[in-house]
Amino acid sequence: MLNKKNVIIISVLLVISACIYGMQIFIFKDVRNTEFYIFQDMAFIPISIAITTVVVGELLDINNKRDSRQKTRMLTSTFFSDIGFELMSMLALISNIDEELLYTINTPELPGSDKIAAIKSSGLTVNADMGIYTIISDVIIASKTDILILSSNPMLYDHEYFSDLLWELLHLMDEFRLRGDYVKLTPNDLTELNSDFAQVLELLLINWVVNAKYLKETYPNFYRTITSFLDN
Figure 1 (cartoon, one colour):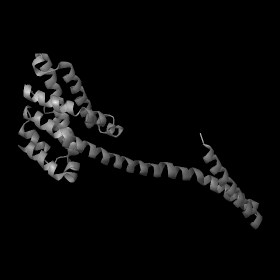
Figure 2 (tube, helix red, strand yellow):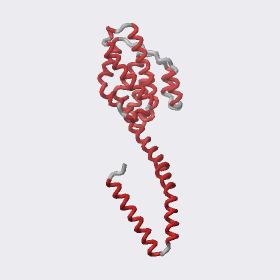
Figure 3 (tube, rainbow, N blue to C red):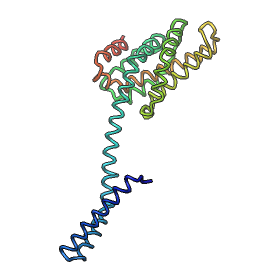
Figure 4 (cartoon, rainbow, N blue to C red):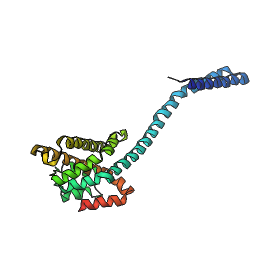
C-alpha cells in the first residue's frame, strides 16, 4: 500500500505531466498529435517495465548472488581456519583415507565434481579412541556459539555441502551431551559416533574441495599448510 509521501510524489508528477501536455496543446494547437504521442508513450510503458524489471532485475540478481557467494566464501574459509582444519586433520589420522583419494583431492587439473564423487564413493570410516574423542568433543563444544551463528546465516543455505556440515556438527553436539564421557560409551554408541565422525570427515573434505580455489587465492599460506598435511 502506498504511503502518504509516495501519493504526494505521484500526484505532483501527474500534475506536471498534465501541465506539459496542456502547454503543448496551447502552443501548437494540435490536439490530435498530442493524443497520438500520449498513446505512443503509454504503449512504451510495458516495454519499459519489462526492461527495468526483467533485464535489469536479472543483472542485479546476478551481481547480488556473486557478492553473496563472495561473502559466504569468506565465512567458510574462516570456519576452516578456526576449527575446520583441526577437525579434518584429527579425523583423517584415525580414518581409512588412502593415498589415491588424497592424490585425487590435491590434483588441480581434476574438476571439483570428480573430486567430490571420489570422496563420496571412497567409503570413509573412522575409529576414534578416547583421546581423539575427547579432543573432538572439546573443540566442537568450545565452538558451539560460532557454529550456531553460522547455521543461522541465510546466505549459507545455498551452499548445500557446508550447511550439511554445520547440521552434522550440531548433531554431534547433541550426541556429546547425550552420551557423555568416552568411558560411558557402549559398543553401539561407539559405532554410531564413528559413523557420525566419518560423515563429518567426508563433508569436511568436500567443502575443502569446494572452497580450495578461494582459499588458494585469498589465504595462500593457509592453503599450502592444509595441502601439505593432506599430502603427508
